[in-house]
Image: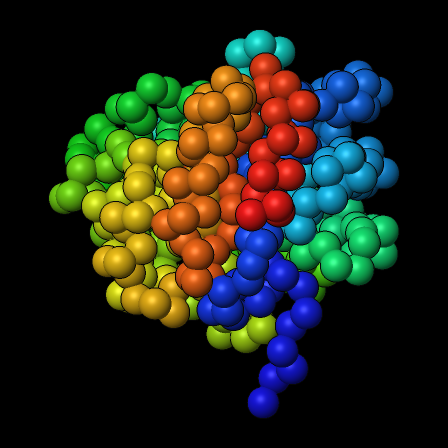
Length: 345
């Protein structure tokens, strides 16, 4: 029998209700923190920040020092995989990521056949450093993007409002799309395994663009690729825990749960946990799901949102989080108040 974990997040991922709820927030190392903005200036480019272990470790630790979150998530980006595969990736200030689009089998053939893990050694060094520097009670999380979300960037060359370029490609050239998704399944699985080996105790898979997929494409491009990633990770590293976040995937959450895809399902802010939890198997942990804008607003709207989540999930294995990433304009004082309310429940 495996030893019972002592860290609160890992206990939840093992299916155990923990109270007060453990808490971390997506994008917790980010622009809302003045110390992050200072470190970001030192790095030069955003990718340089991701690939400089000393600085990536520092920004990962900043929210832990300030707030004492129960989990620390590796500071990196979902686009390091296409970058490592050989696609040109750059981040333009105030515009976001720009990539040279991959739109055909010819373009795909120019990428590496397999993910060259050595190109991502700085990421693994950051995890190794964090394993040594984090407080002993803090869970270390790794992450990657889901294949559909990453493919959407690779095809469009940028973020798009409704992922129309990638969706159109899936209809017009299904063989190319399937080949790209397959490459990303293999690359992402190997990347997550290596993160676990470097010190991550659990990982989160971000399907940020799940809402864009119609039912006719969802299984093929989202559910089944994520299933294969989780199965591949657990076959190689049985102790690894996986959180699956499908933004806008509410109608499909019960299908992920019933198929046993992931140890926890993260809920976006559009879902009511009081309605969702009764539809899920009791052994499936959940995470979420305060509206990031309620956190910006603070005061009574924030408190009402927190209290509703706390009331809905008590007695259930749940990790308190936002329903998506924290926004740059969020007041630090509101984060402090949110943590105090969750931990004082």
